[in-house]
Image 1 (spheres, rainbow, N blue to C red):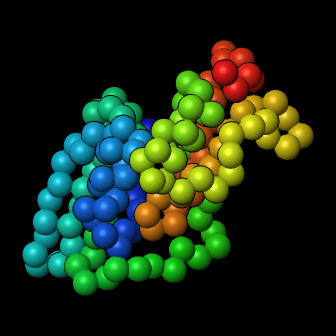
Image 2: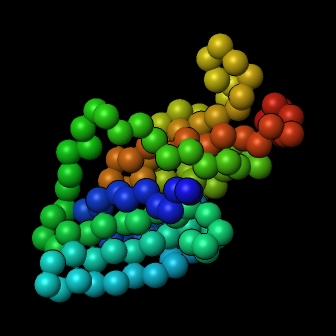
Length: 134
């Protein structure tokens, strides 16, 4: 068994695809409209679906906003340098929720950003990186 994808409902598919591809550097792997069901699915990821888990962005036609609820946590992405990743997101107009730095009660360097729909994304700095901000 393996995880295939995580599905997120999005209010503006084009804006979400742009965020995940242009800001985070994922690739648009496939996109399909389902007129009978009035929805569109777009799959994005860092690698092909046969090689790892991806995100399924689901746009239900005519729905531009969702209540995220309080059960959802976040998507975690490993990055080489969390400080640099935050700066790149900032330069692309993305929203930083928590700047890069050591986690409370630990040494892992992490940061949190938010996608256009308000979903939280955690950057976790690869362990072999130093904790300096240079």
